[in-house]
Length: 232
Image (cartoon, rainbow, N blue to C red; front, side, top):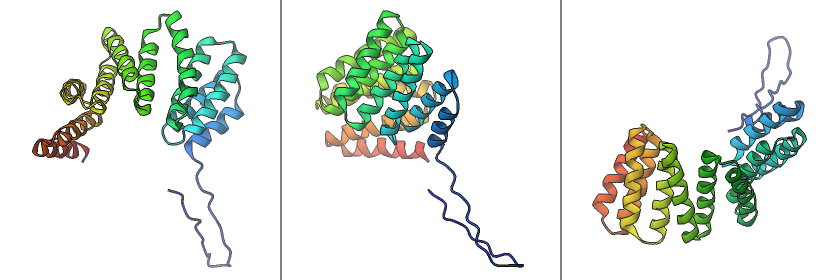
């Protein structure tokens, strides 16, 4: 929320003083990027990407483009590919799926050549989410299952839970409710193991949606109550 200008009337005379509004943290990161050079400038642009990715994806895409220019000047292919992932995610969040897939595919090819499993798993997951938003469920399922396989090999619990949740969401959209429940429950178990309260609430909410669609309203209400209790 933006602060309204505040006005003071001192005892000795009358005048108005307006306090400037605090800049948005993301805009501050962009200003810092412009004020710096090289690695520091790149890092600030990447931090801006992370800040804007969900609420202002257009700004995230612009920051990613600026970061890529800096990465090219630094001669770092690794940094260039980091910006491609952010650009892919930002464009997917804007609904520019063709552009998103272009960026993500370029990064995927690079990380395959480097055998960078963690980065590959993340890209599989981001690509799956974009396909899911598009309604391309076969592709979403393939990408999310690949992500889950790699996260398992890495013993990345959080990544496994995210992949399982995406697999569950895909089956939910395909009306394959038994498979949706199976994957949501597996994700829920992992979220409990790592004590991820937000993740637990998300899984419970997803299960409530499935049971609601199956007309099992008592069970749906039970899961929803549990989710709300965790969110308190």
